[in-house]
Structures are given as C-alpha cells and as structure tokens.
Image 1 (cartoon, one colour):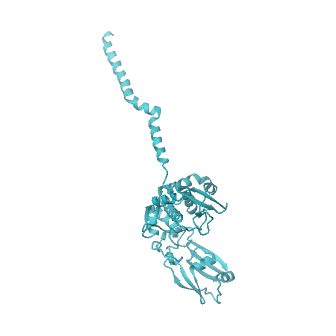
Image 2: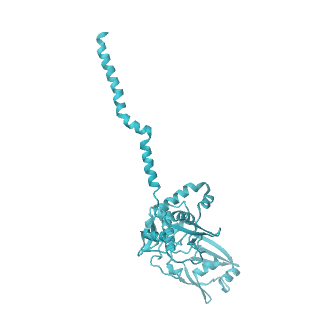
Image 3: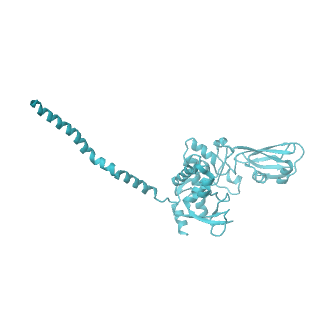
Length: 342
C-alpha cells in the first residue's frame, strides 16, 4: 500500500486547489454583495436624480378656490398636475397627457405674466373653474379616483415632469392655448367662434374624434321653450330657420329665422347645446336637436389628441397639428421673471 501514498497526496492537493482558487477569485465580489455597497451606491444615485427640482417648482400660483372662497398658493408643478388631472381623463395615452400639460403650462405662464385680473379677488392669479382652468387638489383627486388614485396620479405626474419648463410659442410669444373635449371632425378658426383671429388657431381635420363617446348627442326642447329661449317665432310647418352660413370647421355659422339672424354660437349658448354643429327637426310640439362634437371647437381636441397618441404620434406631433406654426420652447426666462415678481 505504501507505493500508492504519493499518488494519494497528489490527488488530495489537486482537490484542495480546485476548492481554494475559485473562492479566492470570488471573494472580492462577494464582499461587495454581502455589505450592499454596490446596491447602496445605485440607490443613492437614483435618489439624487429624483430630488432634482423641476423648472416649474420655483414658481408659485395663487389659485382662488371657488367653493372655499379663499386663495391657495402652491408650486407651479403641483398646480399643473391638478389641472391636467381635472381637465383630461388620466387613462388617456401618456403623449396626450403631455400635450395637455403643455397647454396648461402655457396658459398659466401667459396668465401670470399678464395684468388681466378681471373677475379675480385681490391676490389671486386664476380661479379653479372653467373661467380659467379647472384645478383639483390632491384630496379632491383621492376622493374622485378612489382605488385608482396611485396609478393615475403617477401617470399625470410623469406627463407634467416630462414637459417641465416648456410652453407653446408662436413667434417667441406664449400662445392662447385653448382646448376642448371633442370636435365634429374639424376644429374651428378662432374668429369663427370668438372675435379675435390667431394665426395658430386655424381649422384642421380631426377624424379621431368620431370614436369619442361625446361625438354625437341629442336633446329634446319643447317648441314653446325653443322660441322663448331664442326670441324667435316659427311659422307653421316643419321649417325651423334657414342656415345661411357655415364656418371653416363645418359648424353652423348663422341661421335666419324669418329675418332674425342668430349665430351658431348664440344658438348653442341659448339652448345649452354641446356643439355649434347641430341639426334639428320638429316632431309635434317638440324640437329634436342632434349635435356633433362637444365644446367650442377652437384649438386642441382632447379626444383627437388621444386618438393621435394611440396611433403612435408624439406630444410634439399633437400640439403642432392643433396649433399651426407653433414651437415648443423653454419658459425659463418667463418663469424667472414670474419668480422675481414675488
């Protein structure tokens, strides 16, 4: 048996080496894993990125809370999240929400730089209603969204942060970034609904709106109420006025009621219609009115924006479609001016 001893020692030595050498090679890496230094460093870097303040955070907005009858002052980015969440469904495509964030920031920056305080209490810059932009606080959103609050809030936050410090401009000036829910397939020239003509608020096609749940609706108004609300007298028969003018957006421009002419806008407002694209018919003592679209029709269609985003269009594609000739620009100098006014 003695003659086999050298072979036995050699085999044992080789076996020991195979165990020790890999352990020595792995040891430096295992140490890093064991004490978590690598993970901690990554987390630390991630945290640093997350706490970098956005360009919006330095500016503040004084919002008049209509229901509470008081002014609340909050950071611009927080205000914008409350506006985007209130003005556009959070389950819309992220690119549509980014487009909405751009319009909201453009509006408030322009408003804060202007001296327009019409209808505002002293110290307030905007209300929380459609007079300016609808705004909802975090508590209001929690009540409205319930179990969906976390993911919806995260999505809106992402849209606002992704466009931080950016606004829409035309010839280096912040635009009047109007928007509405649903078109009739086309948007309106601004002067066809309001008195001012803006080169970037032109009528464009918006075929995506036909998929909107708000695209078509009907309303029944008693004949007597119809005449009283419009201040007209209808002749016997089934004729209800004559459309004598159409807008560029294919809505009703003007209607002649036996010599009394009303605009489509006037009729929409007096009868509380969803749109100024309407048709009607008399049935017995009632007028049945069918409308297409929802809103004034000027600027960006929200459902149109969502339809574009669903087809892969970007936020930039969307805003440049609905606002002709505009650019996405930095608002840094404007925000600095607003902050300096404090």
